[in-house]
Image (cartoon, rainbow, N blue to C red; front, side):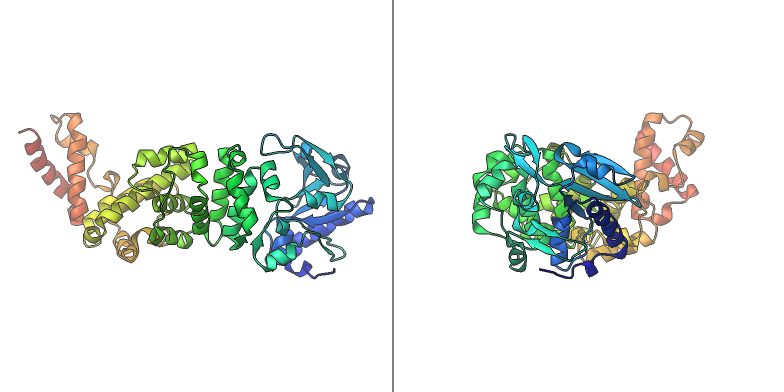
Amino acid sequence: MPIDLRSLIPTKYLNHLEQIDSALKGEGFECYLVGGSVRDLVMGKTPKEYDLTTNAEPKQVKRLFRTVIDTGIEHGTVTVVLDRINYEITTYRIDKDYTDGRRPDHVEFGTTLSEDLKRRDFTMNALAFDISTGLLVDEHFGQKDIQERTIRTIGNPIQRFSEDGLRPIRALRFASTLDFVIEPETKKAIHETKQITKKISLERFQDEVLKSFLGPYPSRMIQLLVEENIFQIFLPNLPKLLSIKNHVLERLDKTSKDLIGLQLALAFFAILDDISIKEVESILRTLKFSGQNIKDCLLFFDFLTKWEKMESEAKENEFILKKEYLAPVKRHFQTRLPIDKELILKLEPIFGKTTLQILRIWEEKPPLLLTDMKLNGNHLAESYPELAKTKYGILLNQLLELVLRSPKENEYSRLLQHSAHFISNLIK
């Protein structure tokens, strides 16, 4: 039936889609917008990307456009680039036999849209939209499931999950990002196909976790992964049952999307008890998170651990706030990000109301690192040539401790006087 979804597509994208649609249909082929973009449109959302399907084979699609990338040509997918925007176009296909639990052993190009929609994972993703006529094709009651906020596989859920072990993880991710409920038989099948899910790559698993972090309810993804015992599939050394610290996990939904390390730290801190930083690092490396995300997560995980133990003491003690938190933040981010009010306020999921106190301290621009001090190793060499260089580190850290407690001491002459006192104690 005709439905007005075009108005939700920004003009720039709509022009491109009409151009692709016109080119394919002008050669006698069919063309439909398909998958997640149609689901989003039906939900009243503006999609972030647009995928299309057609009965034209990849070589036929490639002849119609100037810039085409072979992104997955063995599976019938090419990417058409218009004004630097990518549009994936996939030929109608029928997937044949899954033996690796991830991809079909071979693909046959189909001849009808119905064949293509039938192979898709969930009813909500099996919608197709004709850009030129406004016709919405819904052969699997996807609109009804969207209206009822339900995730349901097309056909037998055990069969669909056995074909592709990533589908159960995608079901959890959609439940999180869309705030949908997984239909009971579909949810039951997640348990019964774990041996297939175990076959997916760790990179694909962590990618689904990171995609869930972009949604409004990332805590839901972590909660579902715990409830369904999915983490243990990839991390067999974890306890069989994980408990959730809800007061921690709920902060995940309020965390800035650009601080992935903080999101990871909150997620794992909420479900892991009495765990060392090295063990957290091992988990993150096993799950193939990027080096930078791991480093950021470890910093924030350490903050969460310390803050839980010393919050009452720390929030009354500026020295602790500077030494244990602000100095590490500056050391960690100073070459990567501007450390400003915006960044400090993003740490509220860790520090709560104390964040404002931390911001006030930061805006006073106190010396926090050795590089902030008015005296350095060269000055020590000039003033105390007899002092062994092996003592420099001890002396400079004593001076840093001093200026952390009393920033006014960060003057060259004062630090030189303090140095003389510290040196006399060092050589006693």
